[in-house]
Length: 469
Image (cartoon, rainbow, N blue to C red):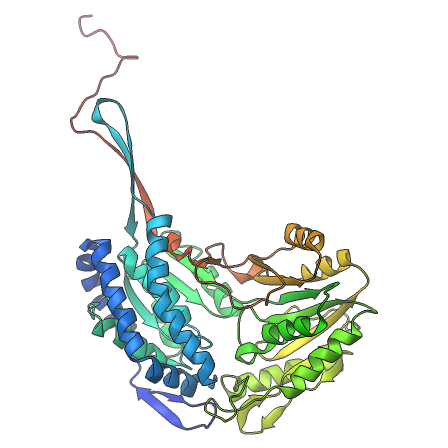
């Protein structure tokens, strides 16, 4: 039995028996062919009904996500909006990214381009956006004609079950979207199942690297990895200190720092940084941390569980032990609940800073002497998901854009909050060059090139003996 607990209260909110990967894959294989044979228009209309179902359950759905993740209600409401909006965005992407084309040749011959679904795709979802992020894989995969076996994070299974129920209520056949309830063991069974044609994964770098190794001998299966980041935010010659501080706080502490695009490293000009850091500190001290339904509404909820809270706290203490200078202390508010205050620490003097994604509300300050050093420090990572520059200089942004190594590069905007109408993905350890969001259509279907003629015509003009000889 898998039990889901509310991290803000500790109470159990949902339970279900652990599922069987074999049974779920078998059911999806049985339903795939009929779904794939339907027109794309039919499939899109089914998913538009899904969006309407979600719209009618918005408050209920948002409350469930809040109770299972500890995120504030205002934030989970925006997640439900993203779930609904994904359908029309994915439909546009499907026709733009995977079009059918015909080029006419001589004698009524033509060269045709069409796209086919892979078959049955497994989706492994994360806990931080337990509806929006798996939905970002599932919707484009369904539009393309695939069947899905979805295993939500074992930390947010109730949200996954609710999402799947909405698909079924909209008329997407039950054997086309399957729910696999379980933990890491069920995830491994699903990923290694011979009956899947690919895997779409959003999660940790550690999990993504393991899957990449597992799928190495299987080039016949599609693998799309959406992983994390150690994302830099550079503030340089910005004319508005308060606005820059606000963007830094939004970048680092939204969703209690549990976003793959969250700013982890704040890079500033040494000697000109004091006013900015003081402005950030003052905002941090005003941040309300609390349960989802608290009044006034909190800016941050808790992290996902006590184990995660301990890991983030340990990461903060490790930086202090290595010489970091804490400006705002990250600490547990309650020993038995995973609420953390936002942390701010200057790590300029820390040698061999760990290039890790500390998945929580912690921002590390690094002071550098010049802008070239700022770009070098921003690129000093194995990751490459998101990066942003706050500056009033277009010339500096041009240098930044041309030299930074990241899949999302912003100017005077936060590192997080990426648009679903654009591709989403990174380089390095942030993914495997299969960006999601608008480009998810690329990995949900494969192109088929066809040379076609209405009649059989053929001749060999060279290299044959004379039949009369």
